[in-house]
Picture 1 (cartoon, rainbow, N blue to C red):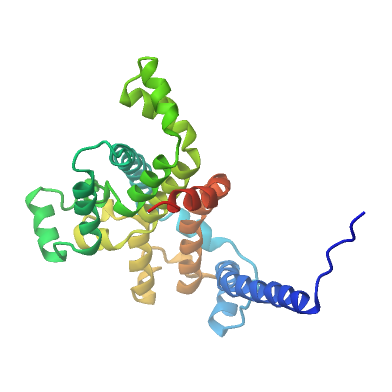
Picture 2: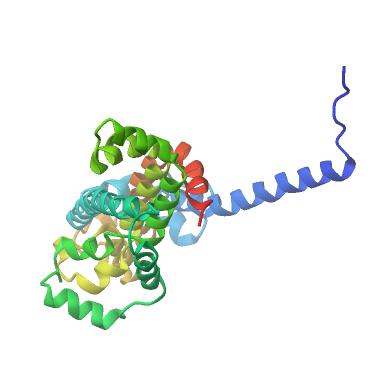
Length: 293
């Protein structure tokens, strides 16, 4: 029997260093989040005095109750959920329909079409012309302005295109011999085989739409259409007295800092719940879709 491979002293030191380094980096990213949780659950006196670290002091849940009863928070949450669902569905559909024909070498003018798409990644019309275009299209202060301009993401389209190019051509040829058309091949053959990259790109789109506040800050002035991230932005930058001005009783055992922390955590929770279901496809989808260029 062959003896086990011996690990040198240098390799052991390197492994220990890697473990320590990544543990430290992991804690660095988690500690602010833990501190946020502690602040959202701590009493008014503890937050004001700065005694809250990684554990809550004087546990209370009134801040969560206050935030969940806030009509503006609920309205913004509804807008963000609708935006994420509609935007992700339409963007993934149109991006896939764009990537599939561009993955075929037989497509006439394929290189020039790809060049036009890549050109938009490097250059744009600018913020003011884009705003004037949205205004002329009567999209300002509508939900559509938050997802229609982002229907086809070129970077995500290239990843899907590269994934399609990696699938065997014999599958499509066999399907055509059986009388299948291009749409049927895409739906019944290509998409089931492309589940990893589709889940990855769907996660990309969902996170982008959920976290986007800049487009809403530019195009949305109607409070009922403001997404959750814009609500949080205004919540954080507004003065301390604005938080509790509509609820005198809420001032008991609560601070603006704890309300900010509770709002941020509640806004982060939905997207965190989605990620575990798509995590197993994430790495495989990105790596396979990025091999070919």
